[in-house]
Image (cartoon, rainbow over all chains, first blue to last red; front, side, top):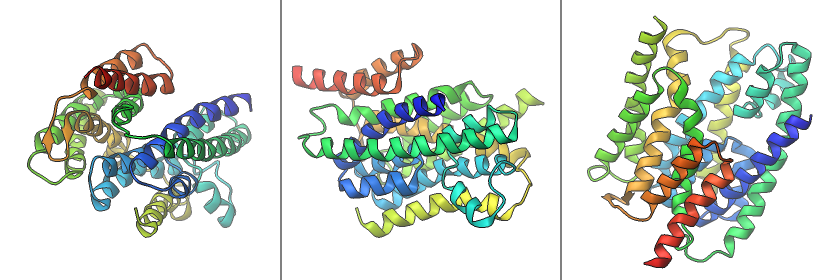
Length: 215
Length: 100
């Protein structure tokens, strides 16, 4: 329980930065909070408002957000055995399958403990994430020029903090390099937002490299 | 930002979470599909980092965001907390811009 709470506090701080950046990108405070409560998957939310803030259209922002949310589907399958049996409860629990709840549930070997870790983390993260977003959105409304405060530099820093732990996986470094370089090279040639989508080609060399390691 | 597209995005995100447990029963994804799913976030995050540090609209641009990213990289490497990383990047860019 204490671990779930401390994760929640960390997520709350992360939620504050999301709220600030969402209103700086032009969302209303209510929209920022709705995203956190309903979409409830941090990296996708940052990607979405990041592309909007950089001048990309909604369509261009949609795809990277959805691609980043794909992993929740894989998490949900891996948590299948500990999610509630009854259909309506299962449907509710699915909304709370994210990085943090998956990690906390997977850390427990006993199914009953895994279930309570999932529940405690879900409640804690949801409450802190949405309330952090609200706080950030309200504070963010009073902020003048986002650039003079360096808010545009917050997005890359946030994504770097999210990427770093994933780079230890086999194939991940080559995937990051290919995806990152491909996107930057394409910036002058295709509409804003699309280079991010194009970076998905980096998955191919990443999977190939990962296969070589595991083979 | 329209509410319609925002709620559509929320609906798609939920569908991704729910489709597996609701339809697949106890089966798990394996093989190439699993490897691709595990790695899909990596190139996207790398692209978001570089494009949002090095471009303005459709132009490549070098400004205060680059040293800010450098500061963030050092802090991430030193395992600083998330908020410290993000605030330090913002402070670096803001300070450099204030100095002109």
